[in-house]
Image 1: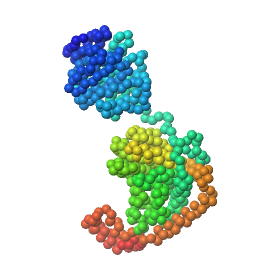
Image 2 (image 1 turned 180 degrees about the vertical axis):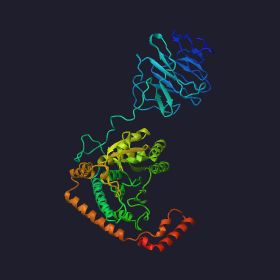
Image 3 (image 1 turned 90 degrees about the vertical axis):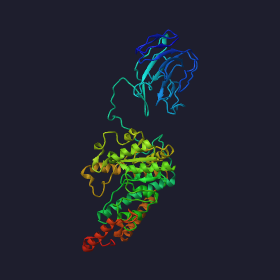
Length: 552
């Protein structure tokens, strides 16, 4: 059949070798029919060949010629032209493969394979062809899709049947209905849990196995954290330290998450994670030195109490979420087999830094674990006033981050989730978000009275019925690894050791006044030298108004 030119019309009616009708094709082009087993016409970009089959296909080439070519049924062709180049992407709709196929030519992922076409047609003998006229009308948002029907030797073309848009990030399917996504769904994301309230594992529960040594250390560190919180809180009430903040109710999050990491993993905490340091070997004396701000405090008294930090243990001091992402990026660049982890509360997810950090981590594909302690309250703001979404877990999903919700009062669930998250983050170089549902049993800090905004009955229920330490103890005891005698001995020894540490910290001299002006500049600039000189003069004139235990 010879060429049929139609330069002055946008509709062509002609006959094919099978006496089929072609209608409703727009844009001037040249139509030509080729026999079976014919090579694709060569142009200055590519040559393509198809094998012989009973079905046929129309193809628009670079010169805008529509060619009648043989092609097996059930093929989806798209991405004909990409940035001025022919980028073919042929998807056979055969049995499901369960994975994407990378096209050899374009190097990009294709759609997964199907057993039957994803659209509703009466017969499996259909072909769908997606054509983008890039070289004439370069607009990636306009696709002409041709539906080819070989039933009863008839061929029908439908203009602008928009099936899919090949947009950056993947294909977007077109639908004729206008549907707005709901702001939230009635069905909430499930919560991963291993232990029930009696410390028994659920049947068919999957979790990371723990050795006796690790399980006992996890439990004893959780108990130590409880004792430490009680005594330091009392010390603040006695006026011996200026401030304190407990982790009561969140001991499993602290210790179990730390147990799943390695010392090479870098920790970017908020302020309610001292159990992470405890697991890594921070001593009770080191905790006491920091809270009392003496000269042995690594921060030299320049931080509030409980704002711990340790270079030796890869634990930074009261950081922000983006810091963890930047550090993870450096680990990736250096090829380190480690990740970073950053802890934050439910209130922190309302900050701009949270969203910027998640987006950066997702786009740059860095090994970082975002650990959200959703304890119900951001000081006095309940989560009902913090979220309209289903907590924090869906926010990670919205940024393209693998996310999971877990029971933060279940030590085995926390350990298993962080262990799996760490492996994925490092092996696949990707961020992971974990939302741990828990409860802050204590006040937000010693500056807060939480009974002003929540009931004592609510607090008592979580302190007793949902206590993570008691729950984990039942599991450890059930394995024959713990006893009442061991419990009493450990609590008594911890209390005695901590009281000695506090006495030692109180007697230790405070940092020198000059330390206020060090550790920022290599050489102290003139303006800071002047400030120090002025401060010393003021203290000398008003010595009774300044603490006597600070060396001037």
